[in-house]
Image 1 (tube, rainbow, N blue to C red):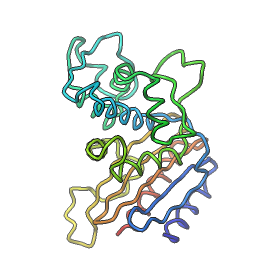
Image 2 (cartoon, rainbow, N blue to C red; image 1 turned 30 degrees about the horizontal axis):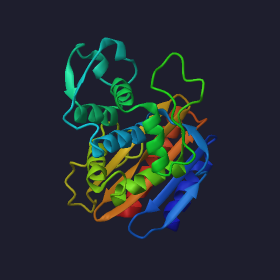
Image 3 (tube, rainbow, N blue to C red; image 1 turned 60 degrees about the horizontal axis):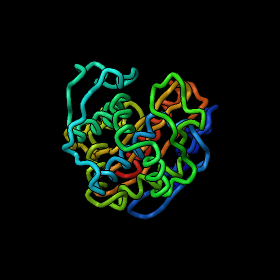
Length: 266
């Protein structure tokens, strides 16, 4: 893993921004951390612990994935996602709301789920997952954020969450597998996986089939991508957070890091 770490160090050394990174080869146990406790504005990466909290409520019997969620015009918010364009009064199963939150980063879906499980339960779920540095206070796209604080994450915490998910110990083995399956359907693929061959490519020419269960996060000056790489029979957990960098530069570096991870896992 030394060569991979060296390449990643070279890539971020050329950046004027701050990076928080945890990489862990889940086959060998080798791990590298950089600014792992540094706090970053969470952006849409906060949707992973929100998803975990929803699955925890399902595991406890408070909700089921088939529960219908009714869309109310007052709950619609802007930004990413399609639910804001749906007809008010429509209803969708809880499972579909989770799917839209993750694979399209739907902000309206996210706020609906926050209302369903409650801010305090999400905070408690984060503590139970050993996310000691990260914070959650706010629904998304609000004009008046919570004065108590902002949604922040540390690479160490997100790495802990992903590691538990990969090992089947986040909520339960079934819930972990379901969350990974949702994240593998991610449609926002312009950061870590951007330079990777299409998953639908014919791999007869030496390229190894791959999957990535990931979630991005972005606001101007802040760009993240985190997830679990599956390349052949190998797995690697990657948490890559950035701030105070030009958006095009951070996007390019993230895609180069993803390319280096794929090469390493081949």
